[in-house]
Length: 368
Image 1 (cartoon, rainbow, N blue to C red):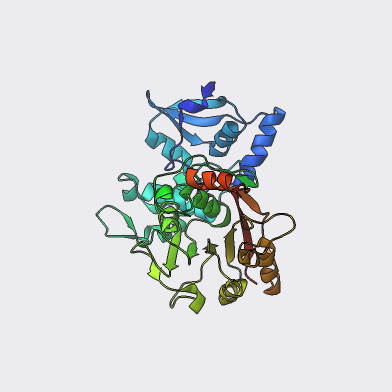
Image 2 (image 1 turned 60 degrees about the vertical axis):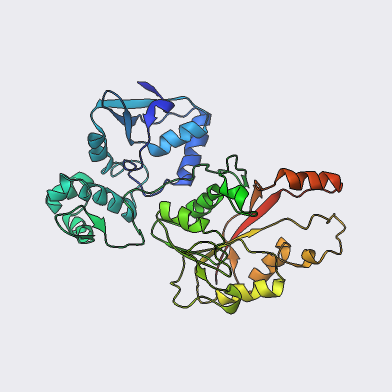
């Protein structure tokens, strides 16, 4: 039967994967636009709510393709029934499960008051995994007899995480439509929806993210709810979780090797920026995501005498530094329409009869 996409409840606890695979979703979108058909998604209906148990990639693709309905196999059952179905979803069809996906399935049942009392073999049969694998993850729980908790206080694998950004960007041009009040309170503050997309594309749940220009600590909030570990520093931190440290003096003591370093730096001489890059040389294989701004507001195609033109804002100079260090660019550049322009800034640009640059650039490299 056909179900309205709006009527289907997408609950992260029922999502059988740690993260949605964006490449798969894009392929599904293209296939749907060609008129291809897909197997029905599996939904459990409890008389009130349609709980999606299998087919998250297909539902996401249908929404992005502009559809309003999807073919669904609707079964009678509760959210619990949907969970039991979802923990073995994709074992025999669809995108193969990763080890992290299998772990999520096991953890979901170990976190259930009824199933946590069952044997490893029982849980293994539901999750379609070996009982030894269940035993391994059961040992990660502490305080037997109480509510199960994960042993890693940093939240390496939370039972519920935000799987996809609230404003997922599918092209190389990013534009965000909704901001919260803290983006207005702190000038230059990047919206959390932008950070969500950075973590979604270039990191995985459980990985370590480091932000050396943390400012208000937004990266920490986003990383936490998306299941990433994080370390933040800043020369003048505005949040107690941020370590006070000047990255120009080198890497903070005791920093665990990050999987992703996010840089939204202030304007500075390129020599200082090269010094920062060089300090990452011990993190071979780490991804570095860099936000850069446009040329200064007085620039035109012939150049100008503004000192900022020889500073960080010149994206080409940044690229040359990475080349000298042997880094490789691992993805296409993203153009981000700057959502932080205030009415006052816009009025000033009009009054001074100058073009107002309203975009940022995002580039991602891998440390050699």
